[in-house]
Structures are given as C-alpha cells and as structure tokens.
Length: 418
Image (tube, rainbow, N blue to C red):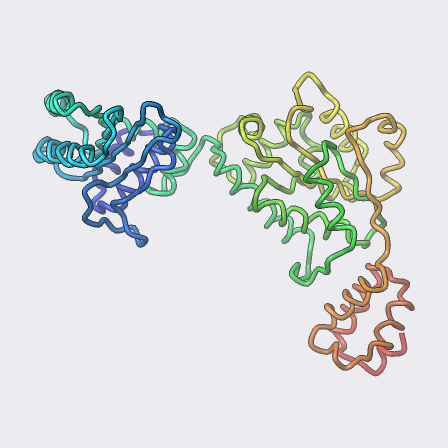
C-alpha cells in the first residue's frame, strides 16, 4: 500500500530548486503532451537554476490562433507564495507584450511543491484574468497524485526520491529489457562478447527483421555453430531504438500464456513490479511505434522442448488475443533435430521464417581464430592460420575449443601440429 503522505512530504521538503524544476517540468511534459517540447529556460546544464524572466517558454506547434506557453516554478514558502506568483504573472504579461500578434493567446503554468489554499488560487486567477492570461496552477497534491498513481509518475518518483515503482511504465519496461540482455550474457556466454566476430548472415538477418512481418524466426544450426551469439548481437543492436529482451525457455515451459510468461520474467528481474506486468507490457507495445524482439533461448537444453515450440506457434497464430497486431517477433536458436519435431505444424504458416546457421566461411573462420588468439596472433603466418581453420573444418565449435586450449597452454609449437 502506497503512503501518499510520504510522497507529499518528500515533495514538500525538496530544498534544491533545480531538482524541483526538473521534476515539475517532467510532470508537465507527461501530463500536457501539447507542451512536450517546452524549452526549459530556467535551468543550466548542471541542473542548477539561473536567473531568467521565465523558467519555460514555447509556442505550441500548429496552434491557430497561436498559443504561447510560459512556465514559472518555485519552492518558496507558503507565506510568500502569493506575492511570488503575482510577480510571475507580471513577468509573463511583460513577455506577452513583446509578441506582435493580436490573435495570440497566452497560458502560464505556475508550479509549487507546497499544498496551497483557496485564497492563493482566487488571487492568482483574478489577476490572470485582468492580464488576459490563462493561469494553470500545479501544486503538491497534483504532483503527488501523479507520482503515486500513474505508471510514468512512479518512474519519476523512483528517479527523484528513490521510492520503488510498482506500475510498469514504458521506461521501466525498457530498462528491464536491457537487464534481461545482461542476464543472457552472463547465463549463456563464458567469453568476452566483445570478441564475437561479425557473421555474413547477421547483416541479412538484421535488415530483414526490421522490415519483416514474421512472428517467429528460427535460427537453425548444430550445437556450437553460433546461433546464440548471433541472437545476442541482434538484441544488443535492436535495443537502441526498439524493445528487445531475452526470455528463457524455462519460463515459457512453466507458463501457459505469453502474458503470464512475461509477467513471471519481469517480476524475476524487478520483484517490485505489479502482478499483471506482462499484459501491461503488451499494452505499451501496442500503444507505441516500437517493435519488441524476444530471444527464446535455450530451448535445446530443457525438458519437453516441443511444449515451448508449440506454445510459441499457438501464441503467434492466435487471433483471439490480437497477437497478429502486435509488433513482436520471437528469435529462436534451435537445433535441426528439435525443428523436425514441429516442422509439419508450421509448413503452411506464413508468420514463420527460418535461417540456417552454417559453419564459418573462410574469412569468418580466420577472423574467429585471430580474434581468439588475440595478442599471440602475430606469431602465426596467414598460411598457418588458413591451414588451421581448414583442418578444423571451419567448425565454430571446434575453433572455439582450439582457441580455448591454446590460450590455456600457450604452446605455439605443438598447436601448429593440429
């Protein structure tokens, strides 16, 4: 249960005027979308206040007649607040007189971290009417309600006061997605992922995934062929502009629906989150212009892999939950032997695509070997490198073992005998 009085007190006690200006400006941008592009004129790049006629200013785009917005923030004590805001109205009026447009309208937002009384409100509204300016008052109770009850407000409450957010905001979902990729890295790779080479198929995959309407992409290849490495790199690339996450196959195996699977995984990463977070995540996805890429790994090493595969197929084929309308794609690294178990069920489905991850090309194999050998690579000639990768059959798994063995023994004499 949220103690609203706690948030109200935290807000009231803000002593850093710059911090309150940032919080109040965030509040305005979330609650008044038409002024999202507000120019915050009263703050420096270090978050400190500076002397300026206004704390914020903008002309609302495409407004007709033109609407100009002005903002004044304050943390002044309640006894001095009415006088302060009356002065702010005069400043706003002075600015309005510099705009040579008789059709223009003017609105001033006055924000305070204090709980104000009716007397202050009536005095401000009366003077604003005399100046032909609309005054909108934002004070402690407005901001507190937003911080405690709105998903974006709770995100701001966490940011400014350190109080955990329980509702899933778009920003929290994005952060959880990023943390899932970090867990994927720790769980699946015992090497430096920065050393992963770029495969020829990656560029094709990334390009196709950005424009494709497919709901499941199977990356088919034998164990050790780099399927997971490719999936990891795709997630890392997509997370800059899209939602991208790792969803362990075990989670899907234990949950019947996509919503429940997401809820379980989100709560595993961020335990404070609300119970229905999976459904909320899909709502955020539906309301945004972003795409969600989910890597489901490692299906190959769990009991009953077919159960997970069949659930993915059912989810992406179901019209009941409106899944086909979601900008969502599953990326599934899979052994060919497991793929054969469900191949007959997907032959006529146009929402599924497959890519075969083969052994390295000559250049890829050489790159992998040179990258793995790292500082000792210079001790081998180009011919020796080519000879070694050919003897290893361009096999990603064998080249990886070879590098691991060499880095352990550092025996460049015997390693040439491979």
